[in-house]
Each structure stands twice: as structure tokens, then as C-alpha cells.
Length: 316
Image (cartoon, rainbow, N blue to C red; front, side):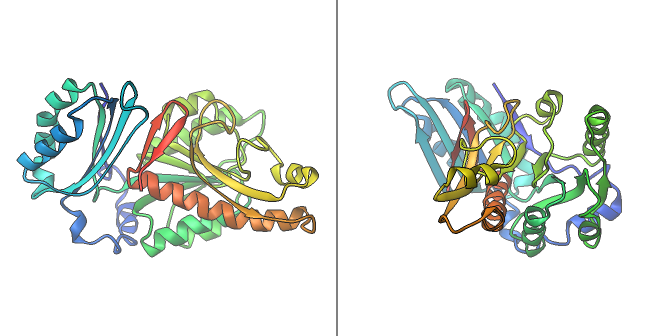
């Protein structure tokens, strides 16, 4: 049984970072203060929705969104996301956990309760190309990504000015074949220091180690500049050009130990013709990449994604 709560850790973070991280939270108003989300996966069987709904009713909750999906009503798995408002949520969250436990055990649920007003702490990794980073920062500034960005890490110094102009700490950690292990050690130490909940690879052109993936299992989102599973690995636009494709795209996915084969969160494509050269493909692709990644990050922040084997269930 997996029981977890999405916490926003701020107590040990320097006051400067805490104050700055609140700067762009104005879009989410007071209506979020008493809103929670319940995510459930379990073997499908009769009575799940009824028991969950009855439980929330007895707690005085008002359900505002409810989505469910079954892989097979007879012998499959059942997935559910419920968003609800409940008075004085902060004082009752532990009670909700304890009182929901018998229902979770009855239906053999893996479940998570998260609070909508507790922002996840997102670290961004980037290399030389800034388009995905800039899109995330713009949406964050605009209040469309309800998150804290306590730190940004890069193996190149190019994004330093962009990042520090917003008051976000920036760490330049060069990576070579010989220094990769030490670089990751430094990165993980920084992520721990800033109490990061999840990592976004915004065109970070390095392969993370198995150890890194295990520490942040299902908490690393990558953007791949190809419509996976086509053109896995490096230089996908050059290979797409050589193949004469008529569609190019981008894929946001969770990172696993298998390169570019993790659970896919979001994809998009655009039509191209034989007239486009590699540079034009890259330019068009960059536009797709940044929007696809931003959507995937938004859904992760809003607890809209459940992972089943190597697939995702993404609730609207």
C-alpha cells in the first residue's frame, strides 16, 4: 500500500528563496485554500466510486471534479482522480488520511492525497538551448504553473543571465565523461538542499544515471525533440530530414533507465514538406517542444497523471 502526501517544503530554505517563490502565485486565489485531490489506482470492482463519494460526503466535502478510467471492468485496473473542497482542510488533512485508510485497504488501493494550495518544488535542468526553459519561466511568471522554482541547474553557463534576472538561484555544473559521476553528486546535493520534489529536463542534453533515476523515480520529466518512439536518442531532426518525414513532433515523458522509453505524458506534431531543411525543422520543432513540455509539467503539478506500467493515465 502506498500512502503519500504532496508536501511543499519551505522551512529549511533560505528566506530570500521562500519570498521569491511566492511572487508568481497570484493566479490561484483563495478558492484553492480548502481544495484537495485524491488519486486512486486499484483492481476494478463494484462499489469504488460509491464508497469514495460517501466518504467525502461524510467529511463535509463538495466534489468539484471527478474522473475515472478502467482498463477492463471485469478484471482490469481502476483509476480515479477526485478534486474536492472541504472546510478547514489544513486542520483536517491528517484525519482524512486516517479515516480513508479502511476504504483503501478494502479495495487494495494505491492512493495519494494532495493539497491544491501546496506548491510542488520544481528544479529545471537545461543545457545550451533556452526555448523550453523560457517557456516554463514565462508561464511560471504568468501564474499558469502553480509551482515553486527554487533552483535551476545547467552544464553550460548560457542561461545564467536569464535565470538570475528572476532571482532564481543558478548553478553551472560542467559535465564531461570523466566528471559525470561527480557532477551528479553535486546536482543531487543541491536538489536535497533546496528540497526539490521533481525535476524537469528542459532540453538538458545529458543522460541521467540509474542512481539519479531511482532517487527521483517517476519524478523526472523530459522533453524529447521527436514524436516517440521514432528517432530515439540524439540528432532526431537530422534523422527525420534524412528519412523525409511529413510530420515532426515532440514528446514529454517520465524518465526511466531506458533512454527515451519512459511513460509518455504528452505529444504533438506539425506537418512539414520536402522543402524544409534541417534548420527549419529545428525551428518548428522548438515551438512544439516548449508547448508540449509546459502542458506535461502543468498536468504533473495538478496531479492529473497516474502511471500504469509504462503508460500514463492523464485526466482532463
